[in-house]
Image (cartoon, rainbow, N blue to C red; front, side, top):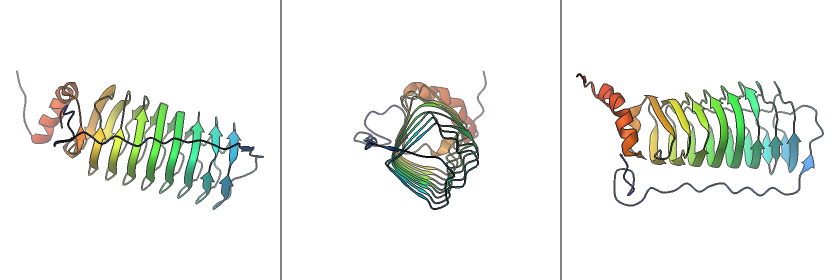
Length: 228
């Protein structure tokens, strides 16, 4: 687990995440109005849209660009976000429970209390920005890259992470309780602070420096008292 360039707990290299490469077609400006539950949004550009409190449960967004949108308390549970670029999103309490994000780029988001529990994230890049209290309980993440962002108390309890990377990220108060990790690369995180679930790090790879930083957490998990 500690700084093995040859892989997470065994021979061979850690499998790298396959990064999303989204190429949007020419987009048509969204003319406004309210989102609709189960709505179908294809090839649209949402620029500076205020989606605060709107109801879009089960909606589908495909080949869309969402730029500088407000999503406070927006209800987007079970939404499908496919081949989209989300830039400069702002909001608190956005509900994306059980949503699917596939081939998505999220850039410079400023979000808090996002509910993504039970969601499916595949080939997703989250670049820059800050997300507080991200709820990913029992979510499935495959080929996901958190790149240079700040995650404050992200909740991965019961989640399944496969080929997930955190280069340049600040991770504070991570909860890994009951999580399953496969080819998760934490070595390049700028800061790694695990609050709960350190025993679930099997299947991840960390650096020697991170191992030393986490030593007190490992000792506490094992019931070892360190003195002197």
